Length: 207
Image (tube, rainbow, N blue to C red):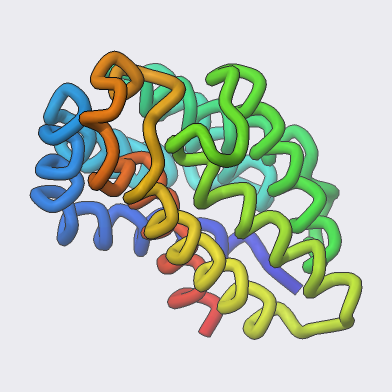
């Protein structure tokens, strides 16, 4: 089961990893974007942790909804609305506690659909979807195969990391990076890189 404390810990660990990797994310974004991805996410996830501490959530769904709304309100650029939509939709879709792996996987899938719709992005477009969609697929397969939560989340994190790496040879088709055309090839997408960090954070707190 995945309880409320685990979801709070997920965002705390996400904030820590993003703070640690802030400069790398910003360098990735400097190559093909606005050079603010790391800074914006660092500020946004710090705000999420503050919101969760100031008004402790009563359920896992409330954790996700609070995170989503905070990111939409507090983070500039594309990252805030996109990540905010993922978590807000997950919060809406998540079943009441206790949260099972199947319930989490289904909610995660709905979050990915929400960001695909908002960003008009698909797998292969060189966006965060290239990390999130493989992670969602890994979770669904874990549910099908009866894998435990720890192993399932490890598989999802691995899929997200591989998905982020796969964006390096891609030409961007969405977002500011798409304006560069072929010059976007050879750079890891910063959104996919940050998405992989979020799955890494989840794997860490589950373990």
